[in-house]
Length: 331
Image (cartoon, rainbow, N blue to C red; front, side, top):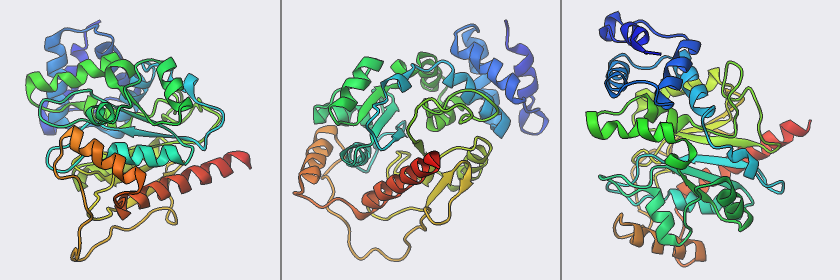
C-alpha cells in the first residue's frame, strides 16, 4: 500500500501541511519500517516531516509503530533488580568525551539493569558502542546476550540494528539526504520496556520492575515538544539537555533535570541547572577517542580519578526515580 495519501497531507509546506492523527502516523511508519514503500516515498516522507515538524499525536503513532517492531528485550529482565534504565545513545562524541558508558556502569553497580541502544558507528563521531568495545564489554545483539550481560552485572549496549532493524534503516537515510528525520526523535524516546498499547507508550507494562528512560535534547526548543509527548504518554522519564546529544550530564556543569513520573513533572526529584562562573573543571579524558575514554572510565570506576559531580547527581536522580516507581507499584 502506498503512503502517497499521507505524504500529500504532510507535504504541503510549513504553513499548508496537515497533521496526521495517531492511527495514521502509526500506519505510515509501520509501512516504512516494514520496507513496504519505495525509497522515493521514504525520502519524501523524511523531507516533508523535516519541514513540517512532528505533532504529539504523530510522535505517539510513530513510537507505537516502532515499539511493535522491537526485539522482545523485556524477556531478559532479571527478577532481582532495582529496575531498568534505558539510555538512548544516538549522537556520540564530537569534541567532548562520551561518558554515557560511565553513567551506565554507575547505575549497574547499584543493581540496575541498564540498556543503552544506538548505532554502532557514526562516520562523524565516536559512538557509545565504540567505547563499550574499548572497555571490553562487547555488544548485546540478542535477548540471550542481553540476559547474560545483565547476569554478569554489566550494563548492556544493543545496536539499534538488532533492537529494531527497520528503525536503523530509517536512521541511515540521513546519510543519503543529509538531514535528520522523525526516526531520530523516535529513537531518543524509545523505551522497549514500556509496551506498545493504548494511547500512550506506557499503557502496557511489560516488566514487573520499574523502568524509565533518559530523554535528552540538543536545543532548548525541543524540550517543549518532548515534554508534551512525555505528558501525553504518561511516561516515567528524565528529560535533560544532553552532552552533545548524549543521555549523560555534562561533566563540567550539571544541567537541569526534569523528572517525569507517569507523565507529570515531579518537583522534588527534578533538579535546577547549576549556573554561575565555573571556578574549576573536573579532570577528564585528554581526548574523545574510544580508547582514551575507556581507559579514563576504568580509572574512574576504580577510584583513581574523581567521577564528575554532575554525573553522580544524574545517577542519584535516576535511582530516586526508580525507588519512587517501585514504591508506587507496591502500594
